[in-house]
Length: 335
Image 1 (cartoon, rainbow, N blue to C red):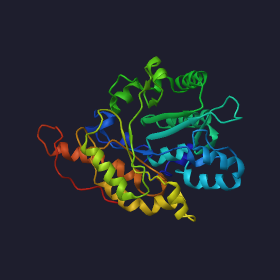
Image 2 (image 1 turned 180 degrees about the vertical axis):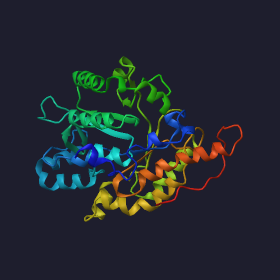
Image 3 (image 1 turned 120 degrees about the vertical axis):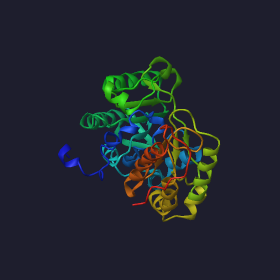
């Protein structure tokens, strides 16, 4: 699909950062509300690939004996997205959760994984993302690279070299306090979190691991309660994620043999999106930053999270000094 065909596919959010009000251009990005996708590459899982080595031994044994039974089940419960990366970005997603792995018999290429491995390689996905960024020069994306299943030290070196070469001057330095204005002035579009301390210490373009809060529960009420408790404890000073994603366990799967993660997520979206619409970004206790969800194209999730940023503008307008103060504001409507 050409760029001229992509303009409206994201429902008007493809360039939302470039359209934020002037008052928000100097706000650190970790004080803005940013929509993200959980397990961003799980839309292309490969059912012909084996179960990950990190999975429980009983599941791996069962997969060796009865792959025709295990892999369709894993596929149903590990697929968290249905949109390719460029389309997720068109929808407004600006945080990508990339879980990297070395696939057995995959040659020198690296892939992604969630239960099983993906069809698309890391190189293919990141090159697609780089092309999208070229077409949207005022959009900034946070990429979280993690897990690194079965990667060797040499794999890490080659992967980081590829990332630095591909994104080059688009990478924000980890010691900076990025704002939209500072990123635009420096031509920077990528904040790259790399969850490997050794590589992070060697390259100032790599950011540390971004905390990800998630409840590890299939119940949306428990997810909300967990996130509320974490908020009361205080937010990190930099980037962090509030995960709306539900998590199934073996008992849940056995009790719901005809269900899958998509059905479970869609059924839970209403309370999760209501909670999201009530949130506020910014510094201080109780504020959100990155909010992640499964199946990001199935609802108005991106628009709701993006809309939270206008609460910052309203709050600033209600104070003569321009500083943000805590006061109740109307929630973002669920359109």
